[in-house]
Image (cartoon, rainbow, N blue to C red):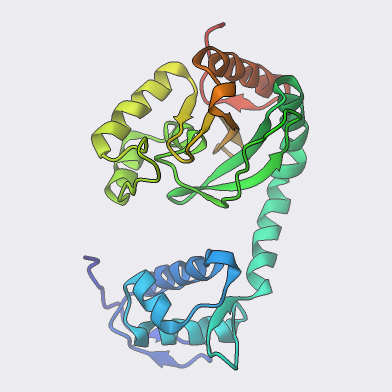
Length: 276
């Protein structure tokens, strides 16, 4: 349970002061959680106060207050006929500004194309955001029957891209992630416990790459390598393919190829691999 702190008056949008009995930090955290919930709504759909209240485990009155503030600031729109809410275009402008600053797609795309040409497989770029990964870019492969990755948020515990990024974090960060993760099974092969994940991360660090053996999608295998972008921001490049096309030996070969090409393009690896 989060302990509330009383820190005095909290400024509202119109400049008036209201003592809410909660810290401004708590209020800001709730507002960002609310925005994330709206942005990640399935299919970009509209959300009701009741749905948001259940999703965030907050009282409807709190949701109403946060939505009112965010709407006044221009980050939330309300559909008048239904009374439901959605994130506004202003949120997209913020995200685009950050991506433009990093220029990740532009900088990493040539590397992704080289990996795809070398392997014939699809390549995805994932970066760490809070306690999940975000799929930023994908280059399609040339081989038939490609595996499609349609997700935007990438769970760290059951994907190769997520696990290899998580392996770059320190012990405290890993334990904080574990404490906040329910380990919801996606397939029968999904990691289900903290003990399993810790063991898997030790293997990832020893190998220098992560694998996903049908943990996120039945019939699909993945391999991912971690590197750093910007000011030490962890990212990963992953290849997903049909399980039959990624036997253990080829997974190792692809991982080494990816590592070499990452270095060739001037990026810093999270860990070097021994030759195949």
